[in-house]
Image (tube, rainbow, N blue to C red; front, side):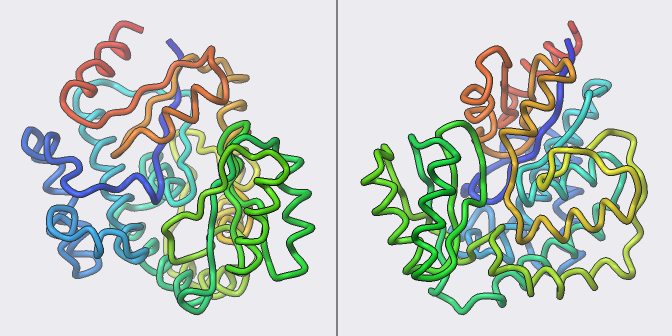
Length: 311
């Protein structure tokens, strides 16, 4: 069986996540300790005690990177992994790069914390917004955003699956776009509980600021092919990898294209490695012939190991 491994981003976090794996695998504890040391924040305490702190962007990003990588390390400790490719949704791209060996975990934790801080600082609190649009095709969503743009910035930023697109921008423009989407026949237009309008042009200055964070960090070409969010392609060199990470802050996430690319390369199954099962749900909506599964506890871990072993 040919498979790819994917890592979730912000939005998949929940209180108490990973406790089953942590109780059974010491590597989970070790990885959380390393991450907490890197940024002087007790990430495991946040996961178990404080939903509000967990949902703060500057905490969520290192938490999700750590949780995804810890899950991957548990899987790798139990079975030999040979994915065709790997990828991560938004922030999850950093987890994918760590898993491939392109970036050290310790450096990545510091990097995503910085990423979160520049994103949060880029837009005054309460002025930005994101919304999920369900039931309209991509072209229509983009078209309506261009109409709502007269009230401010609003852009299609996550192409998650056919009929599921996320828009982001300035609050007034996003609210107006949501009304227009409903008038155009959208099943739902839901404002999302986020503090930062990610992946839109409002983040361009933040991206230029963030670019300097790479100056003293060592990247290398990884052992697995990582498909990037901005173009659904892997990088051919380190400079290209860095520039795609910078662009990712203010350009859309092409998740549908990434999954289609995996399918075209012969992949039959997509394994979501990290808390939640958001990407597993998207896999089914993008291509029903692909099977998807998420590792969220001991039972799902065992099933995945059996599937890989019997492939």
